[in-house]
Image (tube, rainbow, N blue to C red; front, side, top):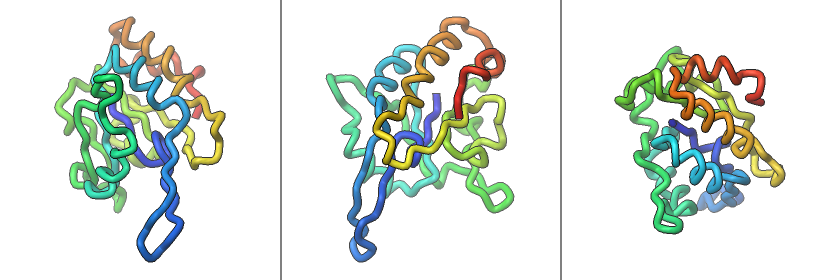
Length: 164
């Protein structure tokens, strides 16, 4: 399972252009999502952001809650490929079987190389504290994992239940 950072798991709004201080908001349900989905998937964060920015944002997660490590790996902008002037997350570069790999991102251009492996999630802009997008994905992702089918077939099967 590959997940995006900005507007998928978090929203960071800069308040002060001089020193770039801002407010970080976690998408509601992010830790529940990690705990439930993490029972069935290895979770890899793949962001278009720089490594320095990502490390600052990840301090909010503290990667270790109740002695559970949520993220197996983190990939940054330098791991993306450039296609038609877009940074694209080529998930084949993660080194996992594509028939068992799903990417969740709020921007379709980020996964245009493996569209059938993708879930387009609505952007989280920090305002909707009743957002249920991650929570709503849990039963679908668990069913796909339990069915042990090619994730592309699983995503096709559940496409109508996935809201973007």
